[in-house]
Image (tube, rainbow, N blue to C red):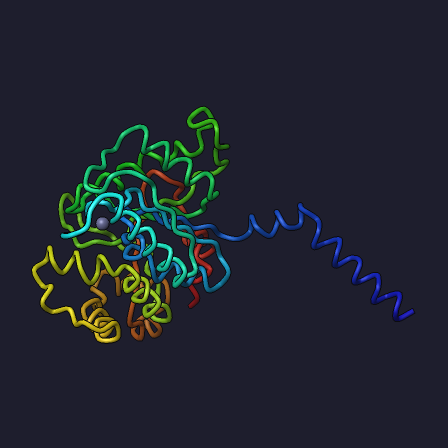
Length: 297
Ligand SMILES: [Zn+2]
């Protein structure tokens, strides 16, 4: 009798595992996140800590660079540079536990065209995203600004079946979030959601470290601090940790208090914050907590 019972349980288990509707049920319950950046290192900056947190809990996260990065270097350029930067994205993605796509648009020449808008609509649909993270359209770099515009232009259109009909439209409009920045005009960033990334901050820094051409070569050169970069990989990683050890500002700290409570918020060392874009679905507090299971009081 006991054997028969065990056998029945085993058979039931196998049936359940092989039942496609059971699998579909599980996957629809999992929040899916897509982060969109202009260059093949921007997503890491926008949401690297949040992405690593989601990934560590088994959620699917995709990064998409809208340009191939073929202009971001003082010595290299073109195809050779794009290939090097693609390899860097794959290593950064591996370190964060996310997949990293790079669209083949030229760096430094991005425009908010219909063609690129359709590329972004398809990416968001194919990923069946619940959360879309992108820059605000008021950033210093034109590629960042236009990435912000392009993603805003994709919000709502991702649910319109007659647009890009080759990829099925989403039946829901995802939540669109802006990544944080310090630009004040025409309006400063508003941290609607703030997440404790203290446990994944080092992982985020390791993702930065994977973009050798950027964090240790191009950005120091264009910023006139290339003399500060130590030679060895361990020494330069220490320099990176020190340089990007960003203090939490007052507005983000206040948002952390809202989401984590005063006591816990006071102890948080590293955070990432997001502003809710008006063009996607508008989540209330309960919905935000459902979308961010990584937000634990
Ligand atoms: Zn960039």
